[in-house]
Image 1 (tube, rainbow, N blue to C red):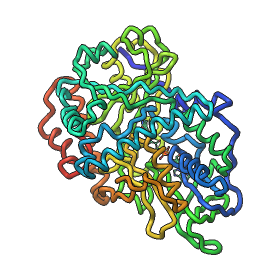
Image 2: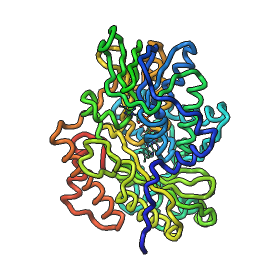
Image 3: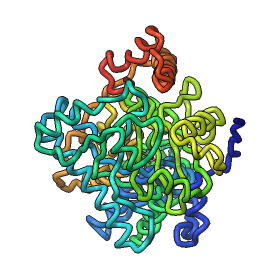
Image 4: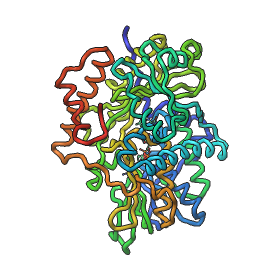
Length: 479
Ligand SMILES: Cc1cc2nc3c(=O)[nH]c(=O)nc-3n(C[C@H](O)[C@H](O)[C@H](O)COP(=O)(O)OP(=O)(O)OC[C@H]3O[C@@H](n4cnc5c(N)ncnc54)[C@H](O)[C@@H]3O)c2cc1C
């Protein structure tokens, strides 16, 4: 069957849907023209920057906050993602090993609180972001994935949290969502799905209404502690139209931090792509998927799949890398090759959708951290704070991150500052010229290995060896 690849619409399906509604389009924000002073300057208009702005105003309504975004707020991954909201229960085994049981559980509970708080925020603000707290299913989509959940089951059991994970037989998971490639799986009740762009645009409106000065179309060429072009300031942002001097600064630029020397070795960038089908509610009903539950699998380059209220499937694939990925170029936003793979894999998982048109395809960059965990901290000079490294799990954690960064920027205490992600020293990637080619080779091997296992074949031993190298080298990446 010939696959028809949707054209590049520039923005994600989510963001186009949201911007078509006055409620989420909001009024345009100007670009910065001229110099200005503020108490806090935030770089980045995604969830992290916007939640930080929101919590700054919650902590102190009088604080003067400037937020700078090169595109429009939500133009980056915050308006392009799958809308899965996870806490950290999935990672509990690793978290216990790294941080100890108490700190690991505190992190999972804080993550879970953020999932609930985001749903409550949408209600309080009176906008419908399609929040559905119906939990998340994770399926084994090849026999090699069966039992991948064993460590989690043992850890949850040991900590008395077996309520967080139910193991499902093949017939049980297929009774919930029917796919011929499912071989059992798990259900976790704590996850939720949301319309990512309605969330980020609704949050933008709330931040504007709270009095934050938002400048869009404003790329920042220099950011940090500074004294250039006037009196010294603890935080200074330089843009084409002027500069902002502030008492504190927050860096919330996700994968773009890769371009900054300070962060270059703390993240590596991957692409993730999503395709959106036309509505087919009768086909969804036929496979039993009637609620807002999310679905993913146990591949290393995982698939994440969810539905919309009008009966579409949004099907995503992670772990894609167009080339050496040294810069974030337009292929992260749209790559016909990545979109084709997503469509093929959608048809493999749900063959009855093979005749349903795919109306949109898009992608975005992922800030992959070595431990698969974000890290929040403060630069050496003391007034500039940062949060990044979400590794494809940032929708809910950015809410937690915004609270951490707001408290840091105002010098206030919060129990969240005691979470192990705060001042976490990220595992560093090797320097160039080793890092980019090394990650490309390993990533290609991971994809080839997943593909062989999808087809129930043994992966080539060399491919298998290379795919497992990142983990052997101590990174929480790959099989
Ligand atoms: C395709 C895809 C699917 C995903 N699916 C999920 C999912 O289902 N669940 C989940 O939890 N996570 C998912 N993620 C990850 C999630 O989207 C991110 O972790 C989250 O949006 C991070 O928010 P952020 O505010 O830190 O970054 P962003 O949303 O990327 O915001 C950073 C902003 O900084 C701006 N910026 C960068 N440099 C500059 C500069 N020099 N000057 C001015 N502005 C600048 C960018 O334009 C951008 O808008 C997905 C990501 C992608 C790409």
